[in-house]
Image 1 (cartoon, rainbow, N blue to C red):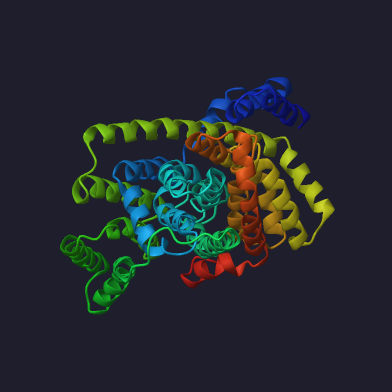
Image 2: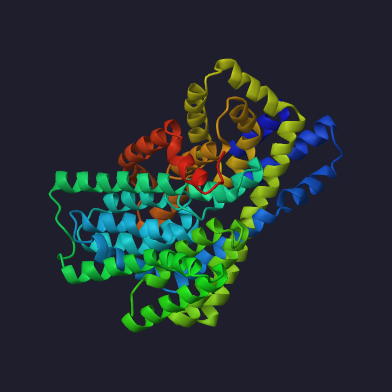
Amino acid sequence: MLILLGSFLVLMVLGLPVAVSMAVASLLYILATGVVPDVIVAQRMIAGVESFPLLAVPFFILAGNLMNIAGVTGRIYSFAVALVGWMKGGLGQVNIIGSVIFSGMSGTAIADAAGLGTIEIKAMKDHGYSTEFSVGVTAASATLGPIIPPSLPFVIYGMMANVSIGALFLGGLIPGVFMTIMMMATVAYFAHRNGWGSDTPFSWRRLGSASIEVVTVLAFPVVVWLLVQAGLSTNWAIGVGLAILLALDWYFDFSAVMALMAPVILIGGMTLGIFTPTEAAVAAVIWSLFLGLVRYRSMTFRSLAKATFDTIETTASVLFIVTAASIFAWLLTVSQAAQLLSDAILGLTQNKWVFLLLANILILFVGCFIDTIAAITILVPILLPIVLKLGIDPVHFGLIMVLNLMIGLLHPPLGMVLFVLARVAKLSVERTTMAILPWLVPLMIALLAITYIPELTLWLPRQVGLGR
């Protein structure tokens, strides 16, 4: 254990990437102890990525990239302006609502920060908001990306913990809404304290138009249900519902209805059992292509090729982290290090609520230093046995782990959202860090609520038969 963990920490301190540090530490352990043949490294690397749920990773990444180049982000932003731009601190509220909508397509905090963040920060600065406030609200709202489904971290956690990914996706909906309310309340507080007004004039026409778009999207599942009750098969009902929606969209020329339909299609399809979460990722790509090539006609084959190559690059880096972390996590188990660490934690407390507090502190700390996917792959073998022994629902714990790691993305020294926004806003990392600090308050309140009110996470999966 000393060789494995010690060499990993030393390599991290020396500045090697996390994935390389894990791979080298694993190889050093195998060479030094001779516990297993060195060929096991290659075998475990293959086993680490030989998983059907992992197919969702490249497709969700591609869907996010396609949404960006299809002009969907701009439409989402315009829709959010019409919906909440008239409130005090309007563009701050727009920032949050835009992230909520985009979260239903991208599945990652970094895609949210890099995609919508570029538009939002520029618009807020043009309207007189300080760069620090613009960066802070963008960083906080970006954490919604992996909480509101679909979510790449949920896919990795579900694979590692052998938990239903559909249950994790549904479990993130109510916590995501709660986090959204907390962030909007924080913007309202800053607006009241600083005497900010609205950024767009109140207009019944614009608000009514945006509200009609929301009602149209929400009416889609109701129409499908009515058609099923009338005797149509589910597939035919969905087809007819989409045809009606396309006709309304063409006739009224809605600005964002088709973009808003992405999360409805994904969540609805999984809830009805039409496709698995992995297949939902493919559906997200197909929908993105439809929007970019057919509905909005804003996607060229050159931009499509660029999005594809960007996806290949990102997927390669993600899967390299998964392969390195799978070897490292497997050796933690083989060397009994995971068991020793589990026993040490259980030696501190047998109370599940105290354990959750300690787990929050541990995961928050780890999230500041290690990539999200690598952290999940390492921590699940250590913490999951304790979770099951103490009677904690693994779906509930998955939400806790992912939210902690999302908060870690806002922290130095390795917070990726921090660095993305520092580059977008042209701020130093130090100033960006200080801008984000006030937003840790609502995030921590949300974390405590999600940790100690399990029903926030578990109620919805239980209602559809996916919870325990």
